[in-house]
Image (cartoon, rainbow over the protein chains, first blue to last red):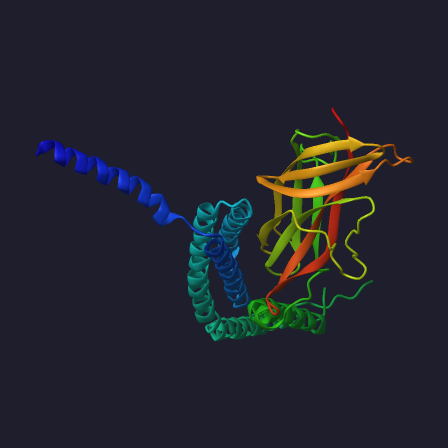
Length: 162
Length: 200
């Protein structure tokens, strides 16, 4: 009875070893489609970063991550050309993940920038208030200076030169 | 001593300058100064990141390394493809005047994203294989660019003037047009002339 169990266990392990690579094997078409999708995702992520930039955001961080995604896409293309389809799909997935993350963060940054830009009137209000206060103070200083100037002029004694 | 009229003018000038200074932040919101000339850089440096030591006499089975560089001065972020190609002396180069890229096949493409003012540098390592020499002719069967092997099957005839079998590895710059969702040749290319020898 016991040796049957051992034989069954060995057969199960052997079946598992052969079935896993077959189950995970990727064809050329699937790999090519994955690389194509990653390429499209990367272009979309760049467009999202451009949108965020046009809204006034600093996109240096996003650009760095796009470069990482670009390296993954290049690796996927090389693997695809070399016939390493599993590797191509894996790298394309990495590229796509990074690109999707950039799209999400670009959206958040764009919204933040839009909210910030909508406060432009605060800047204008502060500037106008500052200007008015400055002019009023200058006017008060001018009046004081004028009085001082006049008093000093009236206090002068004319002297006749010999 | 200044007259009262002169002092009045001085106060008015100080007042105007002060108002202008106070309103600079608001002016910056609405007034955008024109930028400088917009362009992209593309360059090749030698193995020591200097414009020297470029590979010239090459042979099969040896790795050669240079550095590619791209600079973005387009006034905003840009997406580039740096495309590596190979040709012999008779095959067409890109035509920068007409904006036409070389029709030769792409061997390798770097994906480069740059914010305004940023530069990018990356190693380009290449190696030739299946190199053969015949009567006044040489051929290269394969080239490896970084980690990618490609069949090229290029031939070059003996150059009597410059005494060698000359091939060129060159790099084209492509710029992504977000409006048209496509890459276009950016009218920039650089290359290395290489003299294929049987051994170093």
